[in-house]
Structure formats: structure tokens, C-alpha cells
Image (cartoon, rainbow, N blue to C red; front, side):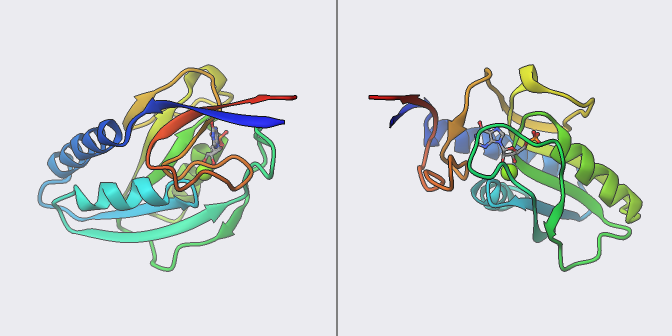
Length: 176
Ligand code: IMP
Ligand code: MG
């Protein structure tokens, strides 16, 4: 089986949109601080690029949840694999995800940080695949809305590969 990747969003387009998101967040939290939490590993690049574009004070942390394994279909059963190190209590939490698909991951994380008594919890995703939503969860900040295609690059993987591509591309498979 061979894999093909077609560019969907070039690096410049991704980063100029992240800059806009950073400006929006900076305006919304003027006079406050944010606790930006990236969901590893997919959101690593997005979270770091976003953090650079926020002008209010940022505390940066990461967590990881259970992933897709080697397939392309979510299990719906989210688990926390690695927790943050800094307490979210009383903080303005923003959770940064690479992509919202079924919505299960962000729904789970939103509830988790509300239960942990964050002052506020907002959800931010670089990509949104609305066609595949299973749970009702709304994003506060969104990079791009994309069609129902499996994408890789800029942190996103297929079977742990292609995270390092500087662009986002649609992966397709053909067996020969
Ligand atoms: P959700 O819980 O179904 O919303 O899925 C969120 C997670 O699924 C993301 O953090 C990604 O790791 C993974 N995911 C969903 N769609 C894609 C995709 O097109 N490419 C790579 N990973 C994806
Ligand atoms: Mg992810």
C-alpha cells in the first residue's frame, strides 16, 4: 500500500491564521493571564506557535490523552495519559488541540478542567472537522474548518508518521 500526501494548507497560511488567533486571544484576555495547555503530541507545533503570538502573560503546559492507535478512527473512550504539572485552579485555561473530530477529547478535557476549578475554560483547535462530530462541544477559537478527510503534518500523524511536515496535507492510500 502506498501513501500519498496532497498539500491542503501551506505553512504560511497556517502561521498567519495562528497569528490572528493569538491576537484575538490577547484582546480577549487583556489585563489577565492565560494558562495554555497543549494536547500532545498533535498540538505541539500549534501550541508553541500560538504561545509566541499571545501578548498577555502565558503559562505553558502540556498533557496527553489516549490516541487513535495506528488507525484513523477514534475510539470515543478518552483517557488522560499524561497530566499537566501546574495546578489549573483559579486560572484562565485555554486547551489547544490539533483537530476536533468526534469532539470526545475536548469534551472530556473541558469537563476535567472545570471540575478542577479553573477560573475559565476555553477550547481552541487548529482544525475543525464538523462532519464527524459525535458530541455537542463548541470551540472558542478555531483555525480552519476542513472537510472529512484524514490529514497529516504540522503535528498531526498517521501511524506516528508525518508530524514533522511543515504543512497540512490530505493523506490517501492506494494498494498496489
Ligand atoms: P476527537 O476526540 O475525535 O475529537 O479526536 C481528536 C484527536 O483525534 C485529535 O487530537 C487527533 O489526534 C486525532 N485526529 C482526528 N482526526 C485526525 C486527522 O485527520 N489526522 C490526524 N489525527 C486526527
Ligand atoms: Mg491529538
